[in-house]
Every structure is written in structure tokens, then in C-alpha cells.
Amino acid sequence: MTGGTPPQRQARAVRLGPRSVAALILVSAVGVAGFGWPFLAPPDASLNAHAQDAPWLFAGVLVLLVAVVAATISESGLGPKAVAMLGVLAAAGAALRPIGAGTAGLEPMFFLMVLSGRVLGPGFGFVLGSITMFASALLTGGVGPWMPFQMLAMGWFTMGAGLLPGPDRLRGRAELLMLAAYGFLAAFAYGTVMNLAGWTFMNTLASNIAFDPDASIADNLARFLSYCLATSLGWDGGRAAMTVVLTLALGTPLLKALRRATRRAAFEAPVTFEKGDGVSRPT
Image 1 (cartoon, one colour):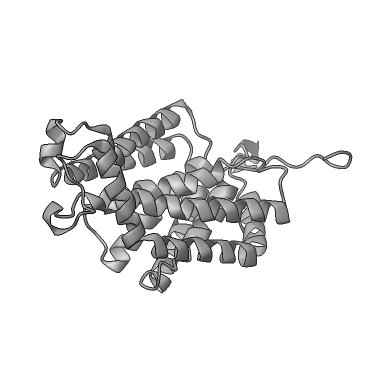
Image 2 (image 1 turned 135 degrees about the horizontal axis):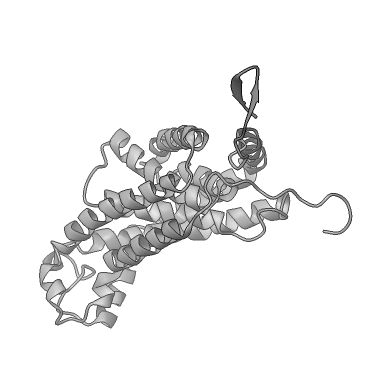
């Protein structure tokens, strides 16, 4: 961009500090282990002997770590205005999820998470994605050992939108196309990692695509790919298609609304006090 007024720096509801970044890295590392342990542990590892118990163990650890990350990010600057916006967006996302969750993966909440993460940044995005998935699980009765994995995966999904390049310069059709492409790929990625969370619960004797603790990593990888093709490809495709369509159709007005609300909230405006007539007033 040349000439004219330089673009205004996009405000963030949460600026990640060193402790928040460290907490995010920690929970993400544990999450990668929780999702990918069937391919990280060799066939003779003792963890494979507890294939039915391992998801429960990681679920318990993840829910605690996600709570720690949310608390750490809140401590680093999630003020009352950001909390109010978080509540509104999380409630909207939780209400959108049941609309199409039972129909070929048509889940409109995903496009809202993409746009919210884009505008409000990665820190806010991680907390928003996690809380929205938690609220929607309570709303739909989808509480189980998979819920912490859903919270973490949705936190990653929404945080990733906040890490996309050019938030202060890229606008208009180019931005929408980038967000639509991200939503398309991330919808498949979300489905794939959630398949990992549920795959090990399958009974090995029930199917030749179930996780086999005695098989090699290559054999289990082939089983997992077959499992994804057989069970979730159509569902993930529906989610990806709806995310693209809604992003292109509604992205422009919703991005404007979110950015307008962010500017009016003035998350990063310093709070000072001036004295007059013996009364302190915020400025």
C-alpha cells in the first residue's frame, strides 16, 4: 500500500505475554501427545497395553491444562469488556452448533470462530474456541471423554485464524478468500484430529480399521486413513463447504461488525484518571 493514510493497527482483545505463550505451548504439546500417541508410541510400549484407558487419561489432563491456559490468558489482560464480548460470541457459537450438527456435518459455528479469531487475535481465539465448544457440549448433551479434545482442537482452530498474515493490511475480497481457504483446510484438520481422539475406542475385533496396539506404526496409519475415509470424509466435507459458503456470503458484514465492536470497546486504550472538584474520573 502506497500513499494515503497508513492502515490502523488492529486492536487485540488479549495481548499474549510470555506466561500465556508458555502455557499455550505446554497444552499444545500435551494435546499433540494426547491425539497422536498411537503413532508416537512403538508397538511394544506399555501405553499400548492401555489403549482403552489412555484417552481417558489424556482427557483428564487436557481439561485441567485448558483451564490453566484460560486462567493464564485472563490474568494477562482479559478485561471486563473482553469478557463480555467473549460471553456473547461463545453463546452465539454454542447456539449455532446444534442447528446443523446432525446433518452431514453442516456446522455454522465454524465460520463464526474463523472470523472472530481473525479479528480478535490468537489469545482471545484460543479461549473463545475452547469455551464455545464446552458450552455447546453442555447445550447438546455431548459431554464425554472426547469433550476436552474438542475444546483443544477448537481452540487451535480459532487461534490459527488469529495467526494468519496481514491483519492490518489485507482487506476486502483477498481477505475473505484467505479466510475461506483457511476454514476449508482447518475444517478437515479438525475432523482428522477428532478422529484420532475416538479411533482408539474402537474394538480391534470389531473392524480391520480399528487401532491395533500390536501392529506397526505404518499398519496403524493405514488403518487410520481407512477409518477416516469410511467414517468422516463426507461429514468433514460438509463442514468445510458450509464454512466456505458462509465466510464468502456473510464474511464482509460480520468482519465489519466485529471490528467496529472492537474499536468501540477500545480494549487497548490506557485507563487514566483526572482530578477535578475533588472527584476522580476515568478518561
